[in-house]
Length: 125
Length: 89
Image (cartoon, rainbow over all chains, first blue to last red):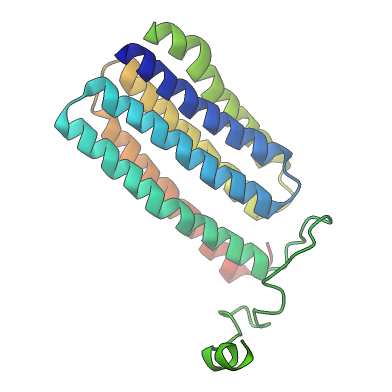
């Protein structure tokens, strides 16, 4: 029973990482690639680490696996947001089928932070 | 059962993910695409390390995974900083 659960965790984790790779290769746009890669790879690695914690079943290994999972959950959005922000500010073209760009005109030309200030947001919104 | 599943399903999926990410690393039109591909290669290598730790019964490899994830995160941040300073993707 525990072996079946371990195999299921491992296969699901590897499958999610593989799906992330397929999405990275097939998606037409940098931002879609970022979205599918970040979420799916994090989930896959988390499942693999859960499988490792389940297999050994000791307190120190489980705590280290959980710490690694939380580290991944905290760092992956940061790295992804960093890449996406830099790429958007440098003007990477979106996919031609994109019809909603909510960030358009909200960053100034000097590549600084959002040009929409707090007062403007409060007054305009 | 575990060794058969890992040999025939888990490891091929992880190495296949690494190969597909490597294709994107070679093709990628911009530098940001290459950074994303590098991030996914690092993630699949971390998965390979975890599964190796299960197969060979070496729990010390979880520490290797943690350090590997940290190095991958820092290198992605460094590459993004480099793009930002350089200007133009």
